[in-house]
Each structure stands twice: as structure tokens, then as C-alpha cells.
Image 1 (tube, one colour):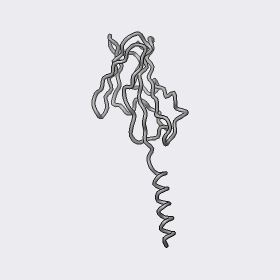
Image 2: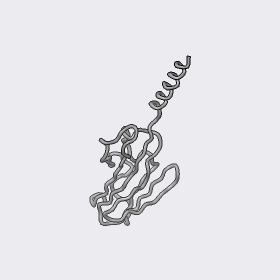
Image 3: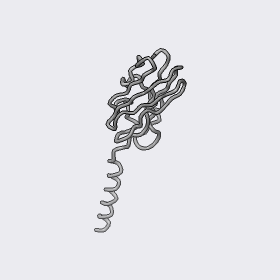
Image 4: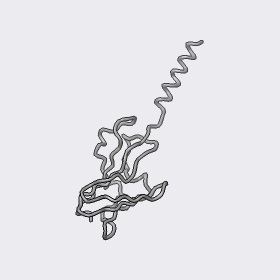
Length: 129
């Protein structure tokens, strides 16, 4: 009887470990390949946030978190309500809300549980201004 109870307990622990939802983690980074200062405004459930990115540099504009698999993640701006990128004269041409304009350079290294964080990158080049 004790053996059956022990086996049931071990089975319950193993089942709970494999049925947990994985945790999504990573960041959204804007890479400024221009010679102008960019201002990035993000809006999500926490409110608005503004980030200034100097010419030739990059900056994290939002953190990814919550439930989900890093390996299956494929929509960088989808966790935000909106993201806008401005230069001094107004908004840039490239749409930061379009998931096709983002890249995940470490996509092949991502795992469902653990491993690397998701690295979402949005490149702004002189042609985008």
C-alpha cells in the first residue's frame, strides 16, 4: 500500500513538471543605424514609456514576460498596445507595429523551457527615415 502511494506521489510530481506552462522572457531592442536621434514611445497595460536612442546605438524599449514558449514566439510587437518611432521631423516610415519588420536573430537557439532569452530587434536604417 505504501509503495502504491509513493508511486502515485512520484507520478503526480512528474506530471506537474511536464504540464507547466513555460515562461516567456526576453526584450525588444531598437537598433539605430542612422545619424539622427530616435525617440521610441511604447504603450502597454502598464502605461506609456519613452526611450531615446542615440545615433549608431541601440536600446531596449520593452521586456517580454509572461506565459508562453520562447521557442514558439514569433510576434515581437504583439505584447504591446503600440510602438512608435520618431525622429526630430516626425515619425519614421517603417512601421514598428508590423511583426514582419522585426527579427529574432537567436530564433534557432530558443527552447521551450530555459535557454536563451528572446532577442527581438527592429533595425532603423537611413532609408527608413
